Length: 432
Image (cartoon, rainbow, N blue to C red):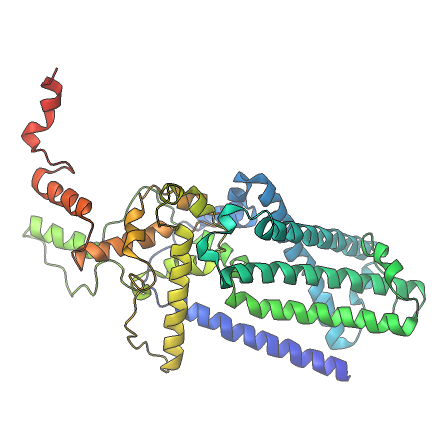
């Protein structure tokens, strides 16, 4: 009864802590401006099934995609066993679903093969990051905590899968020794090969089986509460993020409603002037982004496919779309802590997304080609954040590179980005 009580307390505490941290993330996302991403539910559901569940965009790089698929399926399917562990922990039973007979044996065997595939894939991912040092996984924005975070996640998954297999191996050996409470159930195609390195003493085996059982459940609950603090949160947010994707063509930029209304009233005096004042043109800080932009930031898994596809980054410029998303998430975390510290109210801290976290050089290096949006496996849109920061720099501060100012002046005076007057545009045709 003491073990069952401790398990129940642990389960409730872990659930409460996860809810608390998850609610802070939800609160932070809600800080963004409203945007309508609820139309066309059938199209959105199809997109989510293809991109998030089916991982359609991952397979543009087949080898890492296959490894990721092993981890993804293992994480989802093996955690079905958590239901049995929770029931056993609360009720004091052992393998409560064993009554399913052959189907139960099939499930346990499947879980073991998946655990082995997750174990192997995570080892390969560690090698890719730390020994082969794949370029997109070793750029400067990943220095310090981001690199440590990625390695911690992989090591944690390796330890959890190892504990699961050793727990089954000890259980399998105890079944063979006809130990009390260890009914004959399940099939162990992988862990059976680990029994040879385990002791034959029943008492020692029980201690080891219980140790690995507790290690596995505590590890899973700890990992659950690590998610809100890490890039691995994408395993939960990838699904809503793809569902709320932008369904318009990628090259279509949205006009600012306030500016559109103002221009229409100027061109047509019969229209009433727009009501109210515009608080801000463009994006200065995370409050000016939409909730979908902030959801994007939390969903980013820092895989670097966007940066690896970015022509500006490839040619040595400062811009990294991955860093844009990481900086947005970091600033949002700072704003969230500010709100917590000031009893639910944000107090100006003298910082902003632009300049404090994202430099002007970065936003003006972007060619707005949408390569980053196309490359992202979960439909994150760094370009929308970049364009919002540009709008603020021009419309609020009148600050832009000289080349951009010249282009804007030419548009105003000549109706085209070039310095030539409209009457002279066809001169090239007469030059022969």
